[in-house]
Length: 334
Image 1 (cartoon, one colour):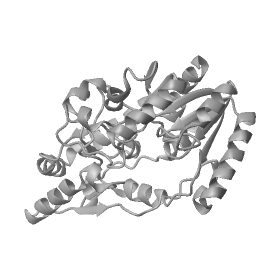
Image 2 (image 1 turned 90 degrees about the horizontal axis):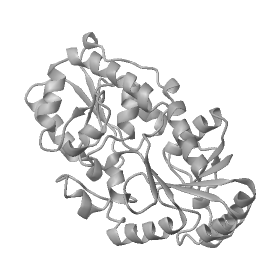
Image 3 (image 1 turned 120 degrees about the horizontal axis):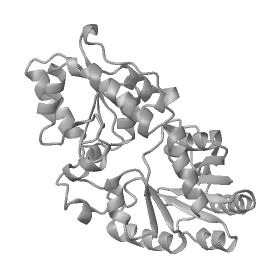
């Protein structure tokens, strides 16, 4: 079973490593270089080529891939070409296809607003673009994967089969460092990829308000750093704040819990029951983040327990080797 993952995204890297550990010849291929220094198995560096060179190179790589791989696993709703003409070619070559949606590529604002007053979406992903994209993909692909039930909402009924699989992390790479109350002034961190989508302004306002009230803590906004630098700061933190607008836990939440950190994130009320009961995330939204952060900072005795619960949660539900089996089951269904 030879599987090619394209065209970008850090989640595919650890997933492919786990799949290889479980006997699947999986390759993570990024089309472009990235500023975060992620290390896929292959990087085509197409961003360094001109438009014509890029097109020619991709055509050649597609042909090579058709000869080499049995299954094509597309991430973020993208394929080899923007117009997705490669899907027909892959079907004619009797290749098996699966698509993996991660967020903005399917999040419909009109649907999200029904249950979430705080939601924001990337402006470039208009509903027209999303629907057109899904229409093409679902015409060729029967199996779609999402990481949580918030995303499942947008494609239920679009594909013949929708699978909800938590994103995978290699737990062995995360040495837990549980918060120590006696160490002194606590460190709170927040690492947004896009401030507006993550609710960063509300976090900054909460931090300012709490510091003005006399609370002693450090706060670091992690932006423009490499992945390794971000992970280093996460490992040093006492509390990690993830996202406050989406309504579901993100990749940062999982990595922070793997480090044994208490995590603050917004989980939509109607989705809380969809998560395993052991989920230790401290729920907060833009309306109450100041009070939630204050309460957590004032109750240091909660930190160690939340950190250890989070680590156990990630080991049980997000460990790459556990999650890999679920992908292999899907591959066998194709």
